[in-house]
Length: 472
Image (cartoon, rainbow, N blue to C red; front, side, top):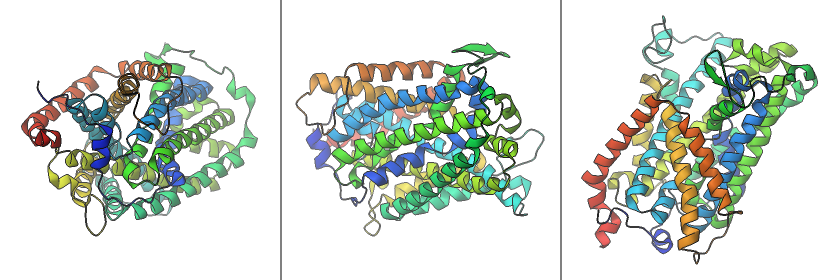
């Protein structure tokens, strides 16, 4: 057991930081967070969520946001205390020790890779619809992975594969390019959402909100869990990705102040937009109508209001929205791998910084190609739930880490202190445990298999090559 729980201190972390280019400001971090959060939540999950909770979906979004908000406060404190790349991985190394940090880093790699691959498949669906409206058609066999649609022969999702490779290239050539692309797409995406709100808010019929919560807080409808809490479990995953903002610490100007602001501002803005969109959509059409528009719920509103001209613009917004989600997740993944390699837990290959681009070039491309292959060849309908369990595990440990560090290391300087400790992290942990219990047993089995693979890697390579082990 010797060395399994060896911990870093803040001085070690800051001393180990390498010269990535510091260019990100509060606005850039806020846009990075919005880029990760607003995408599938608005353009896809609102339909399934409305059928689960009715108009009370707005409350479900609020509950999910509260959970992420409490966790975000904990992330913000850690980010101000240890402003280096690595997010929850680095924070766990600081609070709990090496083996726990490795487990979380391994989980985050799974979260970001499968998350980006899953969103790339959704991106592909909107992109194919966009091409279809322009009279362009890709052969059916190249539109989805094998077995995705019963009765339809498909082999490979070409658009999903290509978009991941394009975004990997953008990330690999520098943070300035990544920042510009993300900021531009987020601005266009927000403009599309605001345009949708302005054009449809006048068509709200208050009687569509009655009954506001047809399935109550928690119930069963047609053999499936329904109500506000089950819907919150669904839409919670709209917020996945805000934690990747913390991965950018070493490329941020004055990170102890800008990181907390970026995390919390992105959560606040995204939550307001989610609730506004949900209230409008369930106010314009009866929530039951979304059964026919499950994969593109916004189209139900546009058809109801006779504003078909907006569908082309909304499709562009959806494509850009999902593009930024993929971009931020792949960016976060590359920085986690970079941090783990720098600490000796992964081979040095993944942590080599390109002299030309000042990015972990090789590691970015290695996992980018794997993610592209996953999006192109694998049916991710079930595997995507692994994203959820990995994220929630990381959230729990970060929240617990704040409690640990406040008790055992109160002397460490914190540029931001989460309010209401110990209540704040305890509430975050309770929310996360509640959501994680709701995942099916198959997800737990797959997660344990991934965990076992990680343990093999750690004991075969990471433990021996750990930078802390070399120091000892």
